Amino acid sequence: MPLLLKNLTADQIQAGLAHAGVTPRLARQIQTAVVRHGALPAGPGISIRMMKEVRKLTVIPRLALIEKVVSPRDGFVKYLFRGDGPDPFEAVLIPLLHRPDDKKCVVCVSCQVGCALDCAFCATGRMGFRRDLVAWEIVNQVAAIQADSPLPVRGVVFMGMGEPMLNYEAVIQAARILSEPCGMAIAGKAITISTVGIVPGIRRFTAEGYPYRLVVSLTSADPVQRRKLMPVEQAHPTAELMAALRDYHQATGRRVTLAWIMISGVNTSEQDARQLAALTRGLPIKLDLIDVNDPGGRFHPPSAGELNAFRDALTATLGMPVARRYSGGQDIHAACGMLAGGCLSADALRHMPSAPH
Image 1: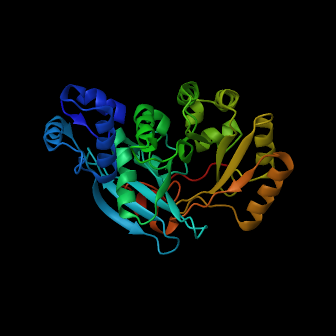
Image 2 (image 1 turned 30 degrees about the horizontal axis):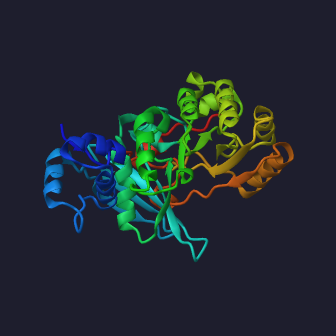
Image 3 (image 1 turned 180 degrees about the horizontal axis):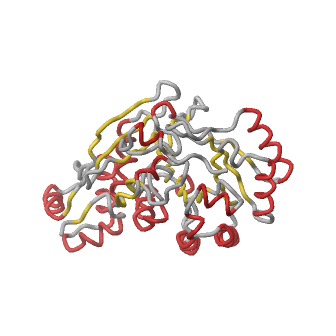
């Protein structure tokens, strides 16, 4: 079987091609050329004969770009790709332009086609699970967007379609390739892996000691309410999740980042703030507040007054950093919770279940 490039680290490439005379240095050159430019290296110091041999022993896979949509509102860009399977998946370019002398972007990648977890507020969950992406399909999302964008990619967030902890091996392999100096050279601390709270994955991530950031979507501190919003609560209860996060903090010394999808009338009350404070007492956290995005119109973000009252309650009870994270690309269905690979009709989106109370 030929080696699948973009799916391997440089060390793995060298190990797989050592019998053909590929040295560690040449393996790094191959990795750089393939990941960043989609071709084997050529030029001074590169043996034509050696590259012919490598070409026989390897395959360079490529994603097909189906569609690209640019938001006229905020410059977010949504890409629809097809990889090894028939079902398409999406990635999003997030421009960071607040520093005129340091314009850059972050890429939000998918790790699965669809998702099995069926969170009540997420369009991806309405698709159901189609398949896992392999590492090269994740890496190639970033490489393809970098090749298309004038902005340098300085970060990657695993917050697109799918649950990263349910495709752990491919996600970690992709993160390793993306952060290799001879890969995409993205700093490990600028790679964020998000989860709805798959406890075995969090514990494995803790034990293996990667430098990547962890974000956990909590959204409610009330287990009964959370189960209505996020069925994962049944398999991995809040108490079990918080124990894993306390162990994560103990092992890494890092503040735990929790994401809170704000749904008007559901999880933005003073009581919700008090419950969160009680749940996280003694655990250093950062809370990211994110407006719900529902293309079907059944879920709504809080009004300005509701948001301000919730933030005041958090300030009074939580005593931890709270940030409102901008969820852009709403006008092109590229915002958090809206990615559905072009697979859901408007009618299907309108029939998403209504928010529980």
